[in-house]
Amino acid sequence: MFEDKLTILDNLVKQGDFDTLNVTLAEYEGSAALASLVNYYRGLLAERGLGREVDVKEAINLYQNAVSINNFPLAAYRLAKIYEDGSVRQEDLNRSYSFLLLAANEELPEAMNDLGAIYLSGRGSIK
Image (cartoon, rainbow, N blue to C red; front, side, top):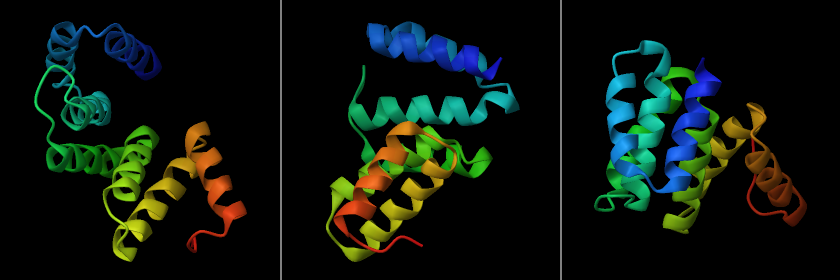
């Protein structure tokens, strides 16, 4: 069920049908099993300004909720990218690495690739 819903929402984003995406997310909001999925896609809308204004702080909060619910790897990966791109402060880089490692541990291919690149380049220390 979860994977089917993920595919539906992903297709709506790819098609740029944000009105239907918002309606579908509203339908899914009542389900505890889909809470991390709803938070992730609401965060994606906020981060990228898809059909609305960009609000990175809101996106971070929504992604963190998705991660705290069930370590949702897509949300952890987006957090890693936001922290990596948002600042060069060591604190943000450490956050980025932590979320990237979480996503890689959940076998998200993009995160595993990025983690491998970090290991090979010697950037930062990953614990």
